[in-house]
Image 1 (cartoon, helix red, strand yellow):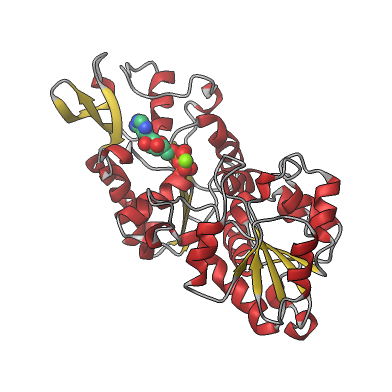
Image 2 (cartoon, rainbow, N blue to C red; image 1 turned 45 degrees about the horizontal axis):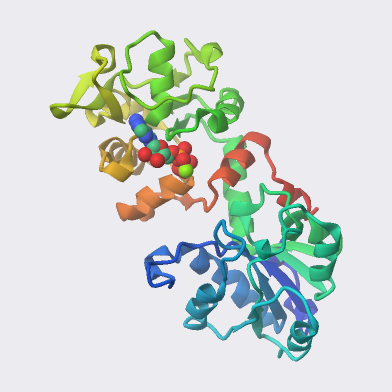
Length: 375
Ligand code: ADP
Ligand code: MG
């Protein structure tokens, strides 16, 4: 892998560098970036600083939101408070080329939302070339979107000498450790959308010693085992019959259900038609305390419960089990990280991945289109 951190900064002096970042942060009601939501921006700063100190002319590219009309201007405004940065509401044109031409060494300019051009998502060669023509080098520091074969991720690196940025390097270095973990190792998998997690389970059954299932994924197992699950969330499309009875897979026995009485802890066998399983009961995880205490590696993705509605106890218990062991710990996933930050417990982990879908795909495939494109 061509890591930026392994390059000689002198080679970047005065050079124009297209830097793909993931600046897709939520905006508040006033249309501004909230510092509490600015994690992705903060994690982009080391690469930006590296390029700045090398004296490169950095051209920042990113997408934001789902609507192609959304603008990155509020993100640029926010970043102006952290560093000197220009913004140009274009992706092409005479004026933009002139601005880049006049950019001083060590300075940075941000371009408009990449997805305002349909060529971004369709990986249009002409669009990729129009961007590549502005620069001498390309750097990808957008791990969380590198599972997409978009022009800015796989098209441009075909056309320019390309490097992995500092955050990307962290992601690859940490997540790749999951493929050869020290034993005993545990994968904790929760959340929803079983279909996206099945490939990870299949692969890690051959890698880790134990897989603890929680979240709505557990509901699929209860259902497959013939238990009543009432109104609980399940992924109807997932076929998990081949996983049943696998000794590595641990399905917690106690759950928290919501029903007309409020919520209560129950044995998963006692769930009735009017119950809705919303969390893994923390006391049900006590019997695995020794497993966690002995573990030397724990990888976690997916909340144990419906955390947006306050059901965080199962996830809190997992965090406690992980932090009271000496295991090397890695956690990732959009909702998982949101939950951990909501609980202010990010410091309990060795590494927090910025990737949601990208992390799952990296774990399942061992690489991503945007990473392959850098080779
Ligand atoms: P991540 O983004 O970390 O990969 P997922 O997107 O797979 O995680 O899953 C997170 C979602 O799963 C959250 O919306 C959470 O509320 C939901 N969830 C977890 N457990 C349950 C449950 N028992 N019932 C309903 N929703 C659940
Ligand atoms: Mg999610």
